[in-house]
Length: 219
Image (cartoon, rainbow, N blue to C red; front, side, top):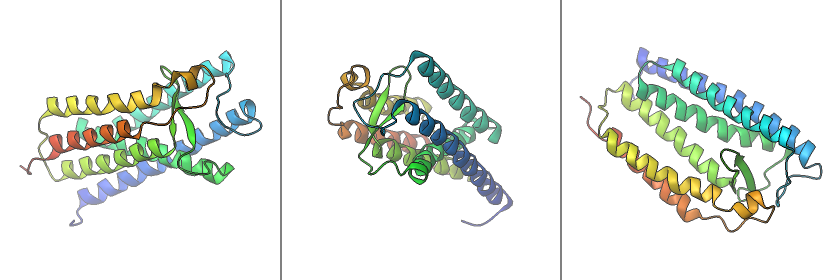
């Protein structure tokens, strides 16, 4: 790709977004380290321990605050919606990937990519092997960068309704794969086998959504 002022600007912004993701990932990892010391002094493992209500409320509010911060940073990074979406995906994905990198660096966890983790708490706890959020985050970064490159090359945005439908259809099985095992998340039981087929279906639909939106030729 030929280097232009716009290309350099895009690369500089992408680098800045990844650096922010690295910082946010460290903050997230630090909070998790503190929580695990409080709630899992012998080491994090399933079945889950019931978190005190006060800590649970604080943690849920912190998760919301993190999402607000990520959305706000992405909104400030560009003017057009599709560019903001691209930066949002890159920031969210790099944040999630680097969160696990920092956990590995600081406490040596996870020991493998198939270890189970608690991903999110809203509206129910989300659980999955570590590889699941990492695959999603990696795809987010790839699609986010592709969106920004396509936008810089003046590709037309096509089929917004189909893109939205495919995105929602992809999100549904992934969310279900994270939250269907309520026995493990709410009743302190060991997790059932993770449904990788649902994850794969969601990722494929996300790729189809991107193809539908950005598959047209440059104007």
